[in-house]
Length: 280
Image (cartoon, rainbow, N blue to C red; front, side, top):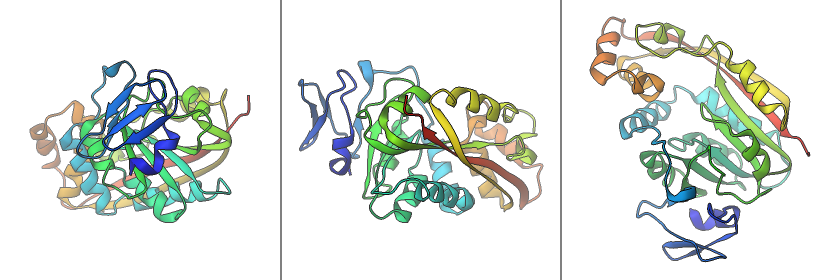
């Protein structure tokens, strides 16, 4: 709930602290933001963003796919990385939180933790707002200044999502951890090899290290790899929840999947890495 994390948030216009007054969030200088009836608050700097994020169909597909447990080993690895870093009650931000299901696993693992789920997609933040009692949902752009107080957090999560290194460094307390999940070149290889599907950048890990090294130091890494035997509905969900959904219509994706056996085995391969904040 927003009330549980309001002390972690900051005004996107002036950076001062926020208070929650009934259905309105107000900063120390008088800027105000109405809480949506679904429970999230829009904290967009400048009031708008060129990005719209994932569509309602993409978010629904992801919720169904994750809810069926197909990525549970990844969810467990993220929660374990959070548990292994930090000594007190965790204060967590997930950037590009999507459905909030990774945060849900983290909070179930860390009973004293509380979290902010941030996304630029309205269908996403609507789901985040109801994902867990200790999650507050915020509509914001990860590439702008994050609407979070400096040094307020113990953890920032980036799971298949953008990584704003400078802002992650600013909002983390000294010793804080950035937990990053990126796909390897083998991730869903049997599926993304189909015509029109979006493949993984083979230099993704290299570019991640270059982007973070000035602000963070990598302290741990876990490779999560397994083969998932997916029935047709799960294949439709995984094809419809990722970047390929922006490039292929539902009909195009269905035509591609019709060529595959049911069920169909795909490789799941990601790296979960922990990056400690450099005190610079």
